[in-house]
Length: 232
View 1 (cartoon, rainbow, N blue to C red):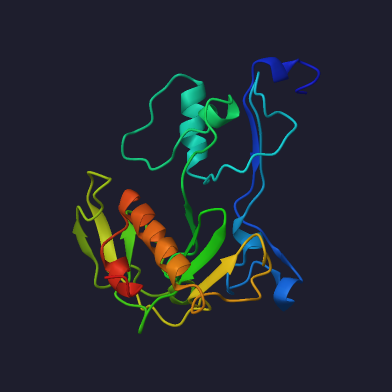
View 2 (cartoon, rainbow, N blue to C red):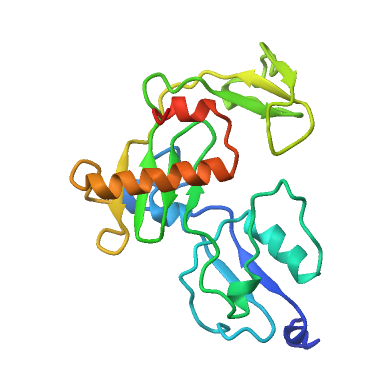
């Protein structure tokens, strides 16, 4: 239909996914609760922007799924809500810039934080008891193992999220163990994450942790996560 109606001339076209799948890598299949290797977090992103000098090519700019909403609003000449953390991809797509962001965070709620600068891949796992841990929101699902329990047991109600000027529930959740571990890997030399450089490259580790913390601050991550990860 894009061809039939000549929509390539005036249409921003984006194709992406929400996460990768294990297809036998490291002995896993599907969407599992295991360490998130790069093939799981480095998801496809295909974009066509009319007049882009990059059409048909590849670009190494780091992007996040939260950038797509801002990009589409930008293409329509609209301003995003100032509380969102996305950045428009249009400057890169139009050849006006070669970067979107310095680093990208990924992961699952209640687990470790994964971070990449495009050169290295870092996982900062929870420290100790994986606590404190809260769920925030106005319509909470609760953890899978508590579908028949009170989802709001022990909940508080207030303005806990600095980027949203609305009251939300804050519910304590048991942290539990996670499959994450403190890890540092070279994407250029070790895409399969077979060699953990956490102890062998302290300078790189410190730089990557600083990048992770900077991105967490930018996204206004709730303060308890710094203690939960042992970063406080």
